Length: 215
Image (tube, rainbow, N blue to C red; front, top):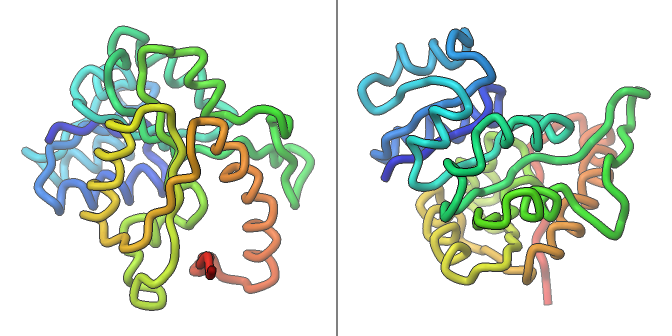
């Protein structure tokens, strides 16, 4: 499958690398085509891995990942181009955290909204699925590295077919337990979990942790 990864940071690098390892063709997108991190990814993984602008990556991918900073996510997706997003599944990993006043961060969205919902409203022809935003980058692609994978990943989105595709991809990453929390409004809970995640990170002094729903 051809996959476009928007974002060149730790999350984008982890997702793109794992996808190439699984045999997918990946284009990593950045704001500028000469982005050093994107170029380094391409140099390491050609021919399966290539790079370009956000627009290049969005046009290339049959399925897309938004791995950009939450504060800049909408601008990045606008740069990717509405026509390039239309009809495609977009896995939104970004979190609306504001670190401008230091630690701990505040939320950029109210409790009655979420960044994923804002993305879905801005690009109504795109099939947005919120997922993977509740764990650190390593666990996103290597869930078995913690408790043999016996912990939960969540997802939310309006389209059942899109969520089925995301579930299949998550399973290929190694996720055994995937919890569907409903339509895109479920992203509010997934994003609002992040202030707790940040506090736990500060308490544990490690990002290698996750949650398990026990019933």
